[in-house]
Length: 165
Image (tube, rainbow, N blue to C red; front, side, top):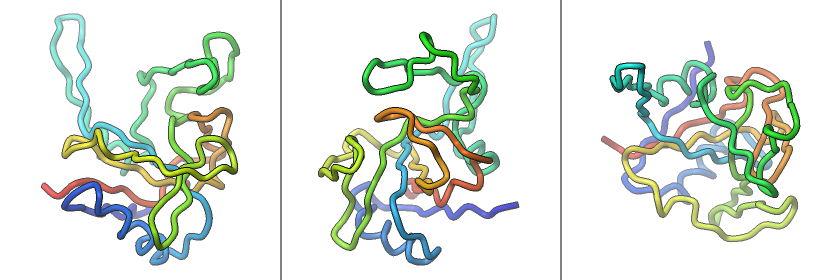
């Protein structure tokens, strides 16, 4: 089983200094994808009982925090419109993420393909969130936000960042 490195940060702003170092450790060159996620979520059953789902554990085991109950976003102009076009994809076979170029000075987002721009992707995150970092070459970009895994998600996942407990 592939061992996914989990890197703990004191603050989300520390990611700029650690990301390139961690990518060099695993000899990764090229673009990556950033997907932030909630470490734990809750779903309700027919009795309104809250069932916790440990999304961090799910990502470590499967390569993605998404499962069969995860929603499709369908935002026109930003996501593949699953409500209008059948993709044949399960919710666990796609992610919504940002394409990121990492270098020694930080990271730049390629929200528009090929156009790097500065964007703060961490201002709304806290200790209840994590960040999945994927190899961009192992996913197919189908819209600004949406990417489909070309193979097993665990093979595309490079590392996970989270805040220290």
